[in-house]
Image (cartoon, rainbow, N blue to C red; front, side, top):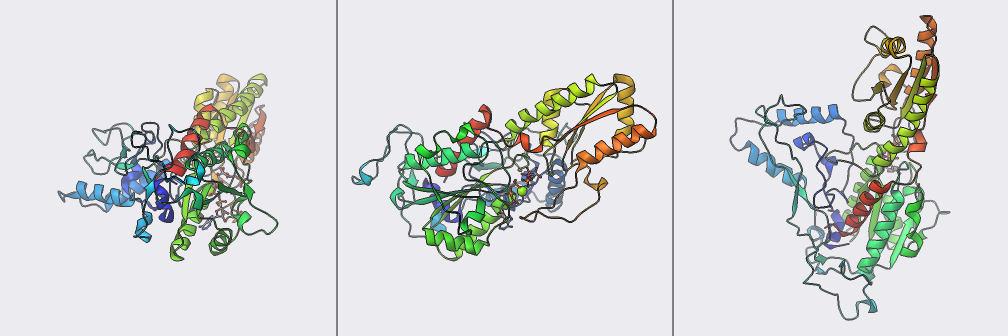
Amino acid sequence: MGSLSLASITDPRTISPSSYSSPSLQIPRHLAHSNGFFPFSSTGFLGRITSTGPVRAEMVKQTASAIDFSDPEWKINYQKDFERRFNIPRITDVFPDARPIPSTFCLRMRTPVSEEFAGGYPSDEEWHGYISNSDRVLLKTINFASPNSAGAVCIDPACTWVEQWVHRAGPREKIYFKPEEVKAAIVTCGGLCPGLNDVIRQVVITLEIYGVKSIVGIPFGYRGFSDSDLSEMPLSRKVVQNIHLSGGSLLGVSRGGPSVSDIVDRMQEKGINMLFVLGGNGTHAGANAIHEECRKRKLKVAVVGVPKTIDNDILLMDKTFGFDTAVEEAQRAINSAYIEAHSAYHGVGIVKLMGRDSGFIAMHASLASGQIDICLIPEVPFELHGPHGVLTHLKYLIETKGSAVVCVAEGAGQNLLQKTNAKDASGNIVLGDIGVHIQQETKKYFREIGVHADVKYIDPTYMIRACRANASDGILCAVLGQNAVSFP
Ligand SMILES: Nc1ncnc2c1ncn2[C@@H]1O[C@H](COP(=O)(O)OP(=O)(O)OP(=O)(O)O)[C@@H](O)[C@H]1O
Ligand SMILES: O=P(O)(O)OC[C@H]1O[C@](O)(CO)[C@@H](O)[C@@H]1O
Ligand SMILES: [Mg+2]
C-alpha cells in the first residue's frame, strides 16, 4: 500500500504485458530482476499472457511492420510508445485531490507502528530504502549486432539497439491509504502453483509492517465472493506464519465464478478497499475488469495482481514463481521413466508434463535431467508418422541405444488429436491428451513393424504443482509478495 496504493485505483503497479502488442515482445527472457527487485512483481493485468516463442516472434513482426523505418524519428517514437504502454496509473488520476502521507513502511523499524498512529505517521528521512517513481529497470540486455546473430529478435532490419525501460518495484516514500482505513483482501484463482502460500504469507506480513490490521482471505477464488456458504478468512502474521511449509493455497482456488459486477458489489458490502489477486491470465482479466468497475463507481479501491503461471509463459518475465519447483519435481518423473525404459528390453519411457501453450517445463526438465531423447513442445510442430516422424526416430533409438525416453508438453501436437470443443468453468479449452495418444501410437507402431517395445507412460501432471515451493521459488515469492504491497 505504498505510494502505489494509489495505483490502487488504477492499479498501477506495473506493467501490463497484456495490453501489449509492441515489440517489447522481443525481449529475451532473462532480464527481469535488477537490484533484487522483480519489476513486474505486482503487475497489473496480464489479460493475455501467453507468449510462446513463435507467438512472440510473430507479434514482433506485426509491430515492426507498422513502423516506418525511413522516419528518422522512429526510434524516439518507439520508445515514447513503450513508455506510454508501461505508464503506471496513479490514484490521483481519478482522485486529483488525494493527498499522500509519509510511508509507514520502513525495514529499519521492525516493530509495527504503535498507538494507532496517534503521534502522526513516522517519517524516516534518514532511511534510503525507498524507490523513486522515476527509477527504471532496463529490460533488454543483449545488443544484437545483426539479425543473423543467434537468437536475435530485432525491431528494424538493421537490428538497432533500442533501450526499453520499465518501472522499478518497491516501497515509495509517500502512500495514499491510511493503514487504519484499509481492509485488504487476498484471493487465489485458477490452478494451483507452488509458492501461492509463500506469496499470501508475504503480502500479509508486509501489510502488517505498514500497520494494516484488517486483512482477510477470500475462499476458493472469485467464487468466494458469491457463494453464501463461504465466509472470508481473517488473516494475520500468526495465521500465515507457517503456511509456506505446505503446498497448495491456504485459501483454496477455483475456476469460473460470479460476474465482475457481483464481485464489486460484495467488495463494497464488505468494505474491501485493497484487493490482491494471485492468478494467471484469466484471473488478471478479471482483476482488470474489477479495477475498471471500481473506477466507474468512483471507489477508492486498489486492485493488485501477482502473476502466477506454472507454465512460465508471461511475456517479458524471466521466470514466474513455482516454475523452478515444477521443473525440479518433473525431473523425478523423468528419472523414473528413464529407469523403467533402461531396465526393460527395448524400453520406451514417455512423460507428459504441464504446458498449455508453452513447453518451458518440458524443455527445462528435459535439459536438466539429461535423460530425455525427444522433447516435444507446443511451439514446434511435429509429426508422429512418416520418415521424419517421432516414431521413426524412436525405432532408430531402440536399434542404436536399446531404449528411449520422450518428454511431451500437454499442449504439444494438439493438431494430431480430435477437437472436443469442451471448455472448463473459466472458458479455457480442454486439451486432448497427447501423452496417452503418443503412448497408444507408439505401441501400435512397434506392433505393426514387428519390433518388440516395452512402453511405460508416466503422467505426473498434478504432482509437479501440488507441492511446496523450493528455496529459489520461496525467495521469488517473498519479493513478489512484498512488492505487491509496496509497489507504487
Ligand atoms: N475475461 C475475464 N473476465 C473476468 N473474469 C475472468 C475472465 N477470464 C477468467 N476470469 C475468471 O478468472 C478466474 C481464473 O481464471 P482461469 O481459470 O482461466 O485461471 P487463470 O487465472 O488463467 O490461471 P491458470 O494459470 O491456472 O490458468 C476464474 O474465476 C474466471 O471466472
Ligand atoms: O486441471 P486444472 O486444474 O484445470 O489445471 C490444468 C491447467 O493449468 C495449467 O497449469 C495452467 O496454469 C495448465 O498447464 C493446465 O492445463
Ligand atoms: Mg490461464
